[in-house]
Length: 495
Image (cartoon, rainbow, N blue to C red; front, side):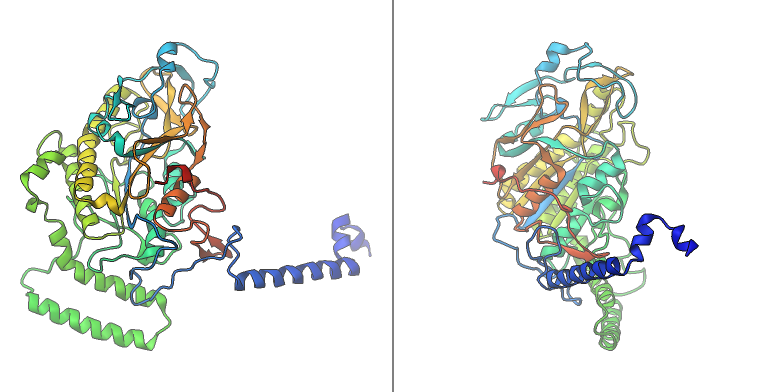
């Protein structure tokens, strides 16, 4: 009895018979409701029934239908690690010219990297471009010529000011590691129409991986078959070439024997989805022995294409990135479902040399990144348009957050700005020459039609014919999705 008295009032209440019966009743009712919702596939917090792709373990990449009809069948994501400065590229802020060199009321005492400096106007002049007269800076003159084809989002904001978490959040919907990337979700939903190449290819920058590395194109808890295959024009997929002295006939005989052995093993374990997926990946690798050398044959492109993209001019980094752009177009032409093209890496970080993270000397470092990206990226978009690829391909140009409208304490760089940044879409299903949302007059905070990363990803999925609230995967007791429990489709940008 003394031991019972030592318990807290809540503890004693739990030992009460009536309380126990009441709690049991509630618990059983909750379990019953959960069972009913599970049967109706309504455990994804949206109230909608989930759409779980019907996967054939032997053919996990088999093309699957869209949730609803949509123009975009493929997507090219051009990702710029390091945070491109929106106020120096696409988000024109004349108010910064009036306040240049001054301290402003809205400037916080401390930002991501310490005490800030004064307001700074753009380091490059803005001019009206195209038929729409969109104001774009001289930093990106080639991309500026294409603004009539772009659909800008000027009121994006994000939940973190750190690069690893920012990349994770933009590409997976979560700041933590271990969640599937955008490309993995899309290929999980739709598969691919090309059986000779991967459904999802990540073309990493010539300088290496971005800060979050393979998280940006990983499969997380989705089946491993849906992770991005990592290669670029300089580094083709490894282990596809035949060893010296090994003939084509011997290679085919070995592949044939392996196929028989794999089928026999799979027949013994017909319900082992992981085994089937592993066999399917090896079979795809076998087919890639033929398809990859062909797709990597950039020398077969005419000289005019190399000249247009810039593989024969500028720095070595620009030349290699230009080759990656040609490779991206060739992969899209061959029907690869998702191509993620990186412009920037982050082996050392924060220096503005390996990526867009310009904490100091932004005039020099952003100019360096622009010289690498501008001509090849503009040529890629223009070339895809000329070939009719934008009829069924969506282009996404993006970065993890923006940069501040004022300088850092060093007086030469801009700090991280999660409160406002700019990305754009182009191609199938989106309005041309259109701008959605606004940041404030300084580019500090998104104010009009504020758009979260969840909204942005929901809109991209919608353009691909995927309902972001219904595409789920059951993991650790939850029906997980790219947009977590958030996100709304921005219908104003749909054509």
